[in-house]
Amino acid sequence: MNKPYKTILSALFTIAIFSVSATNSAQANESKEKEIQELKLFNSAKISLIDAIKVAEQKTGGKAMEAEVNDDSDTIQFEIDVLKDGKTHEVIVDGKTGSVLKISLDDEANESTENEKE
View 1 (cartoon, rainbow, N blue to C red):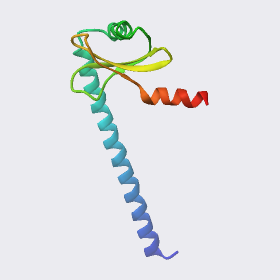
View 2: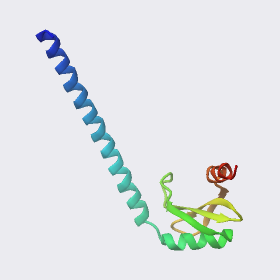
View 3: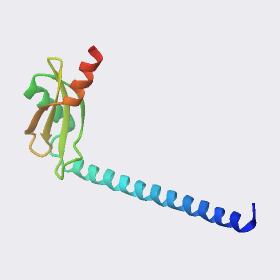
View 4: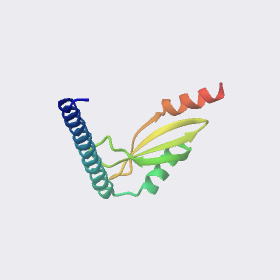
């Protein structure tokens, strides 16, 4: 390999490493900001996650399988997956009032369960 070719190849390799590093750094910052936002939302809740689970179970008559903070909202909301009569329901509970905002069938979870039966 001649020297100019090695120099160009080395420079391109260095640029590639720096751009991957910069991308990873930006993604890490974005992830950290999202985590901080989620913690702020969680801290603004007037009810606990356990209370939200109880509300979801009482409203549906089912058993909670999974619960998390709904990070698709600007206000604190808890998303609880509840199993009732062999179907998974997604219950959204307002973290400030404890009221149920939405109950819907979790089509994705129910579809995967049906595929396992076949």
